[in-house]
Image (cartoon, rainbow, N blue to C red; front, side):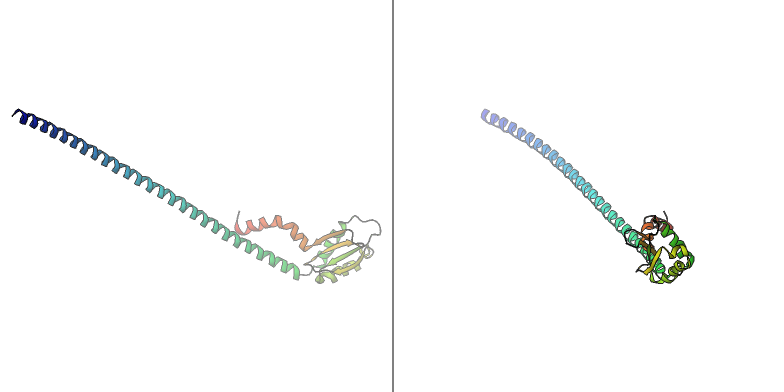
Length: 197
């Protein structure tokens, strides 16, 4: 019986060791499962945060684009309003003839811009609507009769262009030129007046 007892002792010990190994393996498996669940939860949180951050970036990009588009539309409308105002100004200047006092002042201003040598003759160009007024002024003043050789029509809104008889020197005092020179100054003023600063 001794063999049986030894055998039973060996089997019991083997069973106890197997139970212990099985218990340790079960515990280790539970730890691994818990660790895997924790890792899965952590990865899911990271993925969720990544997607939320990506969605926030996309929303910010869309909002920025919408804001830019809105500003472009507003600027386009403002530009359109200013262009319409300037178009009306040009139309008004184009159709309104100069008053005699205005024409005389502009004529003196234009001629004074020249540094004349004695006897140098000039030619005056004006819009068709202003030719008679300017011609009458020239004809009525002795100081102009001797200097102005002719008053010619030119396709322009108004004002005048004067040049030496040989065409070498020219003074452009036309409304077009004056507007061109004033635009950089008056456009911001118009914008501020219409739309605020």
